[in-house]
Image (cartoon, rainbow, N blue to C red; front, side):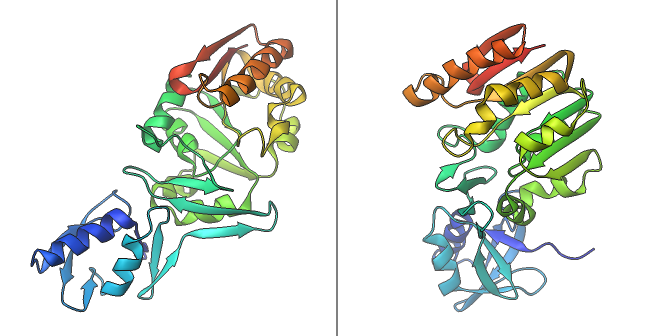
Length: 283
């Protein structure tokens, strides 16, 4: 099995700097954004990781100075994890948090990060659908946290990603490895607006609809798309639709329209779930 690349953010770089300045010759550091820890050697000129990967203090300082980027270490060089997608004309990048990283797309974070980390954000979304069983549809893969969480108890998870840039970022995120390794997760590339109509009626027991903000993907908030989600959901199934802070003016306006259109699409019960920043709909 090949060694996974080292991925660092400003927290790890600052820990290394603090350890060195305090006179330590070794330090325990995470090489994968908090998932595990290794012991590294510190000298006046560099940091040496297990396996012989070297980082100069100049490189460490560059990482320490950036609070919105994660860096992969390749052949003793550092590279910011980002990608400009010609398909969407948007920049995607991996952004560190105190827990799992999030993704920035066109300047918007794909998870809640104020007072919460992306994994807790994901858990709150999934809790609205408990028990998460049978076949699950995730309409927007992103970093794959929803699909990974759903696969822990579901029979199968189908997840759709429109942006090749997002896939590029996910492949380099240590927290997303299971997205590509778990046989219960089926990934599809394409626009959910076009992919969902290809599914058979009553295909899914649970749906997580966590689209980009309305300004980036308005079609995924449309009555036409909601009717398709209703069609592919089995009777007795549930749909969680992430909107954003329902108390805010912008998200509140979007939520009001979504609430009405979901009811018109046929969902028999639609309720607000403010703790999860979204709406829950029952078929």
